[in-house]
Each structure stands twice: as C-alpha cells, then as structure tokens.
Image (cartoon, rainbow, N blue to C red):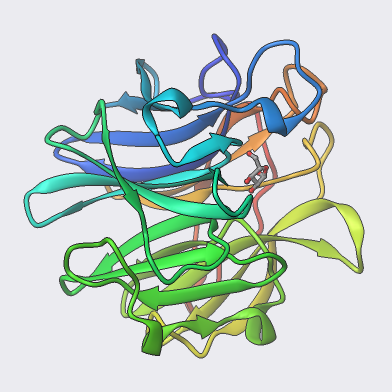
Length: 281
Ligand code: FUB
C-alpha cells in the first residue's frame, strides 16, 4: 500500500466497499488541465485484491448518459441491494439548476451503470452516500449548507419524506457525508471547516441508529501539507483491517487535480477513531 494509491489519473471523493474478495472504490474524475470543479463530467470505478495492484475499470457513468443532468458530476457512492449494484450520484439538474441525486444500476460492481433517474423528495442532493443496514437502505446527502439522512423506499427511487432528518445541528457539516457501521454503532464521516478556515478537515459523529442523534467526535484527519482544500472520502474494513480513503493534492499541488489516498484507520477501545497522519506508506 502506498500513496497516492494510483497515479495515472486524478480521482476524488472515494467511496469504498467490499464485494466478494475485492475492494471497489467509486470516484469522481478531475479533468486534466482545469481549474474548476464545474468541468467534472464522469464517474469511475477502481478495484484491488491486495491494495497494491489496482484495476481501473474506466468510466462507469458519464454526463451524456444522464438525460436530466447538465453539469457537475461531483460525487458518488455505490452499494449492493437485493441482487444488483446501485450508484447514487449527483449532478446539476436541467430543470431546476439544483444539485439532484440520481440512481443508476448494474449487474456487476464495476459497472457500467445505467441511469434510472432522479431520487424523489431530495430537494438539493449533493454528495449522496448510500448505506444499507439490516436490509434497510438509507441516503445521506449534502443539502445546500446542511447534511440530511433519510430512509429510501425499497425501489430506491425516493426517500421517505417522514424520515428526513437534518444532522447539521448535531454535526455542523454541509457536504461529503459517508456512513459506516463499526460494531453496533453508526459513524458518519464528513468534511468541515475549523471556524470558517480552509482547508476542510475530516470529522465524524457516532450514533446508536443511522438516523441519529449523532454525537460529534471532532476531527480525525487534520490539516496536512499537500491537502487539496476539500477532503471527502469513506471508511471501510477490508480483509480484517479498517482503512480511510480520501483525496489530496499531493501529486498536482492543485485543488482541482486530486489524487486517491488510503491510510490505515484504527479505533481505540472506546470506539473513537485515532487521528490519521497522511503518509506515503
Ligand atoms: O468533487 C467535487 C466536490 O469537491 C465534491 O462534491 C465535494 O465533496 C468536494 O470534494
């Protein structure tokens, strides 16, 4: 294992999941030679069996394949639900100019994925995270300055309005949420500023139920040299070890050309995440 995890392209916002004996990482794609996130038009998938040899499965969904979207394929998550693999992703909606969350499906974890349309009852759906627990699907997303979570209907095409919960009072985040379970508790990780000061730091909260309430636990990836301003990622257990995945500007030194990073993640005996120092090992 080394950082950046891959260096043949710039990938950001990694959402990691284990399917079979491989780790799959769903990423957004930073176009070469751009100075804006607004030029992002596709999502990609990478996988590995050993964290050393990575396969780039290429583009799994492009803006041109989504009839309702006009720009900004910004962030993504994926999961396996009742026999098929689903992507939740975001883009700017042609009709409203809002960020909306889309759903796409495939029979294989590495895609390609076919768009199924927008997820209903999400007014502003940036950076959707897709979490399954005890066969119940949840969507967590950045809602224009706040983080929300809700249960999804079984067809995944709408969230249950009555379950929409605003987590910002508990946590203070506004984008990039990702949910994982460790032992019997739920960990919501998200980027946040420290007193309005950039760069974003990776923070987390813990709850006894996916819908909360969450207790804010503060920062676990602090500011570090080579950060890309934003930080957005996920936590995953793979072959008995936990990992944090995120992005940095280590290779490019540019906030819009971000590299995939992976570091070991450890919990203390009370279940708190120990601080991570980004490393090249
Ligand atoms: O990748 C574009 C945007 O940058 C994402 O939506 C944010 O989470 C930040 O990482």
